[in-house]
Image (cartoon, rainbow over all chains, first blue to last red):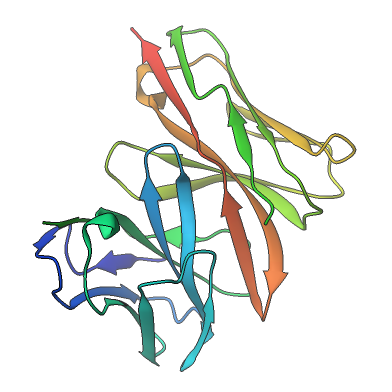
Length: 112
Length: 113
């Protein structure tokens, strides 16, 4: 089974801080995704990457950036955290030979 | 953008009963997938149905797809307390070499012992 890990389960940051959320997958998958999940809104796609150094904006990229320097790692960056970025962040990975996405356990970020 | 919308938002039934959740979407799709999420955890893939399929089974799960109505349903038969979770449908389309999923808001299912 694919394993997707995220660097933290819970994170508390202050407004204005730079925040890095890390995601690592162990199955050499080309595609990786970052979502945020909020009550009543479901999962919304922030950014995705279809290969190393390639990135595409999702539905809500504002206030975020990403980095994919190595195939196994996809980082989500909040350049200057704001309280409205308090959310659950979920990373997922897949490859063109699969249809399903494999999710990490999530990082619950609180911005004070 | 297309969006899956689940109905109902919350469902509470007795153990042993069947649970039915519905999903509607707006645009054409390659496939539709159902995921499950236990509280505070990541999502786990349950079942996928392709756009040219009408029904699919996996264990106690049955999924139907009606592309003319742009709707799908997930049936869980003989429910168990361990089925308590949130269930999401996701519609799939291919974008820039990746399969992009658009998720609905989810149905919160509670199975009462």
